[in-house]
Each structure stands twice: as structure tokens, then as C-alpha cells.
Amino acid sequence: MASNRYVAIPGSERAPLPGATKSRPSDPKEPVQVTAVLRPRRAGKKVKPLEKLVASGERLTRSQYEALYGADPKDVKQVQAFARANGLKVSEVNRGARTVVLSGNAAAFNKAFQVDLAHYESPQGAYRGRTGSIYLPAKMKGVILSVHGLDNRPHVRPHFRLASDVLDGAAKPQADASASVSYTPVQVAQLYDFPAGVNGQGQTIGIIELGGGYKAANLSSYFKALGISPVPKVSAVSVDGAKNKPTGSTSGPDAEVMLDIEVAGSVAPGAKLVVYFAPNTDSGFLDAINQAVGDKQNKPSVISISWGGPESTWTAQSLRSYNSALQAASAVGVTVCVAAGDDGSTDGVTDGLQHVDFPASSPYALACGGTHLVGSGSAITAETVWNDLPSNGATGGGVSATFPLPTWQAGAHVPPSVNSGHFVGRGLPDVAGDADPGTGYQVEVDGSQIVVGGTSAVAPLWAGLIARFNSQSKTSIGYLNPTLYQQVAAEAGTFHDITSGNNGAYQAGPGWDACTGWGTPNGAAILQSLAGASPGPTPTPPPAPPPKKHKGKKR
Image (cartoon, rainbow, N blue to C red; front, side):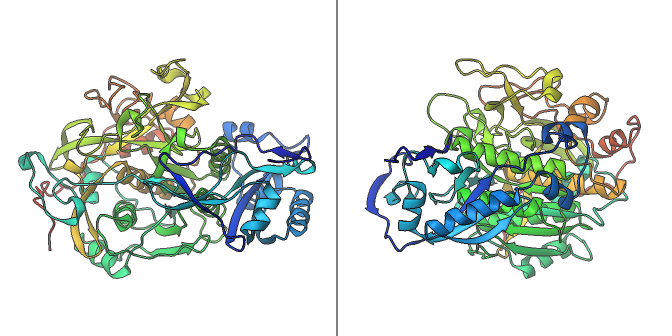
């Protein structure tokens, strides 16, 4: 129990995972690393509040953002002194992200933050954790806003779904094989009329991954088989010690990594792809987002995130800190595309309530939902909400229980939450794309040709489309949500409106809905709208090869 000289960090309370039991105390000498998030420096009278700057559409360079809204050097020195007094080492300072990485042993962290680290066994696996709040000396109140990494439980999950005939990496019979088709990402881009003549040249797409890896030879063979030459440039960035480390399993995290790279690279082959590998922990995920947003070397203009978890499983301090990182992305002109989840309107939570996925529910994320797509040649013949529950997933979507309705979403007729209290919150998704594994994407994972779906595929699809937009305009479209709602969606022909189907508690209908947002893109028309012109007739793309029925894992 913390003494009166300490104060709790608001929203830092943790409970054990469901079904978890404490197995043993942490070894006092166990190495621990955490990320502390500091308050932003106090802005002068001539500096706009960050919320107003982002809402106005103004852009900052990464260096300008750091100078105006980063951590105050005096606060950094105060945290360094706090670390020394408690036997901790400052491993890294990122003033732009307002983070300080602290390292030391478990005993020192127990003392510094008045916690009791222990090891737990749970149905989700073993982890080091804590219960209750994190505490700070009273003089540090407000200087450190949140602390991440004391608890290293698996934090989020990937949002990909294997086609039912390749689950567990083995061929399996399908009840209705005739209804299942698959597409290359190039074919999907043609069906959605991605603008011709631009391929993402000069842009960098950042991709966040929390496990698994890729082999360059597999990517090269995949892109060459699609006729993409030269093959997209892909590089890996290590965050918090995580690396590109393929597992060799087509049903594990490699499928997520390869899906993201292959979809984004196929639809924007001129862009450079930078993959940020981080541990799947509260601190690792946050550090990866901050690394990508603030990367002054690679300078991604769009980021794809295919990982997330129900809002209800996040601490309040984490929701605040991640949302702040995404707000920083908006300030420096980076669009962040995030998968909306694959478990329908409950997001896989079994408490009888409806839940949305975070970080997709952040108002600074472009939340990407999913559809069931049927096409013939280069034309869409049918498209409905993806819902294959209970067997193989459904698009996430609904109303946030955390973030209020943004002003730019006020005219979209977002319904109140169906949960008790009927909170009027941020509605998601914003946009959609093909996600049903039954109409999924042909990809190569660890040398095997398989079909994958999930909203995980939609985030890199939209990231690739936005890279094309940025390539055409020579500048990043940045924080897309206000423009999307207040201009683009209001113009006829910019979206394929999905009006059939549901994701559980929410039903599709004309206009925006909590299943597929505004719908799936008419890419060329959206580009014309962003350029300030009314969307008109779009050029007819070359015919796509007929969709291929998939009957199992190819060897």
C-alpha cells in the first residue's frame, strides 16, 4: 500500500486477466523495462492548443511538433533525477513522443512505483503483472501521465482470419465451396477503381507488427508472380528489442505480417514499406506507434495497424496515451489506418454488451471495417457486410464507450450506443473493404499460397490507396477523417454504399452505418474529391482476371 507521500496515476488500475492466478512473486533481480509518458510542455500564448491545430488542418514537421508539443526538458531532468534516486537507468528519451524509457530490476520498480510485481498463469498464457494502481511521489504528480510495461501480458491480437479451408494450416472441406472466391490485392484494387497512373512513388507506408516476421525471398516471389517489377522495397525497424522473426507457421503472426506487406505493396508498389516490429505489450505497441509517427529518417505518410483489442480491456491511462500518439500523427500529416476488428459488434467479449476495438475507436484513426465482396472482371456484382459468425468472424463496428462523438461526425447520424446508458460516442468504422475470408486475398506466407481475410487486410488496403493519393498530390492528405465526413462522403460516387447485412447489434443501411462506415472506396472518385473537383466518370481499368475459387492450401 502506498504511503501518503505518493499519489496514484489516474486510470492506471489493473486487474488480473480472467482466470489468472498468481504463481509466484517476481524475482527481485528480474530485469524490467517500462515507458513513462510525460506531460506536454506548457504552450505559450502564441502556440495553439494541439486540438485546435489538428482541427484546423494545419501541419507541422516532426521537428516543429517536438519543439512545440514535446516534453519539457525540465520535466525530463526531473524524471532522470527520480530514476537515479530509485536505482533505475534512463535508457532512452524521446522528446517528440514525450516518453522516457526506464530500465532496472523488479525490486527497484516495486519501490519506485509502489507496486507488487508478480507472475501469473492464465488461459491466455503466463505473464508478469500487477494489481491496483501505479503510484508516484507527490512532487511528480502531473509530470508523468502514464507508465507502461510493468505488466507484460499479451496486449492485443491481430485481426486476420484464414479461409475456412486452410484453418490451422491444413486443407479442410468447405460446406459451400462454390460460394468461396479469392482475389489478388491487385484485383481488389481494380474492383475499387484505385486511381490509375499513380503507384505510391515517393511515399513511405509504415506497418506496425507485434510478432512474427517475413522472408524477403517469399515477398520477392509473391510480387514477381503478380507481375510487379521492380518489387516493392521493404525494410524492418526494431522497437524495444523485437525483430523480424518469422515463426514458420502459416496460422501464426507471420500471416499477419505477410498479409499487411503483400496487400500494401501490391496496391502501392512504388511506395517504400517500413515494418516496425515491437513486443506485444502495452509499452511495446505504444513505442512502435511513436517510433513510426516520429521517424525523421523514413518519414511515413501513412501507417497501417492491424492489431487491437476491446476498449474495455485497456486501462484508462493507455487509452489516453495511445490516443495522444495518434493525435500527434494527425498533427504531422500522417494518416493512421486501423483494423476495426473481426468479432462483430461484441468484439469477442462475452459480457452481454457491445464493444468496439481500440485503437480503431480513436477519433484520430481511420477505422477500417469489412465486407463480403463478389466481382466479375472489373465490376462489383454484390457486396454486403461481412458476417460469418459464429464460424469465421464478422466486421467490428459500433459506438465507443470512451470517446465522445467528434464534431466532424455529427452529421453522420451515428446512433447512440445500444448498451445501457446509450452513450453518444465516436462511431466506427469510417470506411470498409473486402475482409471476408470467403472472398479473401491470395497471399504467400512462409512459402505457402493461402487465402486470408479479416479487417487486417483492409487497413493496409486503405494505406496503399492513401499512399497513391499522397503520390498524386505530392503532399500527405494527413488527418483524413474531417475531410472524409464533411466533403468526400457528401459527393456522389465516392463510395460503394453497403446497405445489406449486419455485424450483430448494428444493421447496414443507406449512408454511414456502424458496420461498414461510408462503404468501400471508389478510389478515383475520392481522389478527384480530395483534389477539389466533383467526381465524374472514371477511366475504366484493364479487366481483372476472373476471381479464382480456392479449394485449399496450394503446395
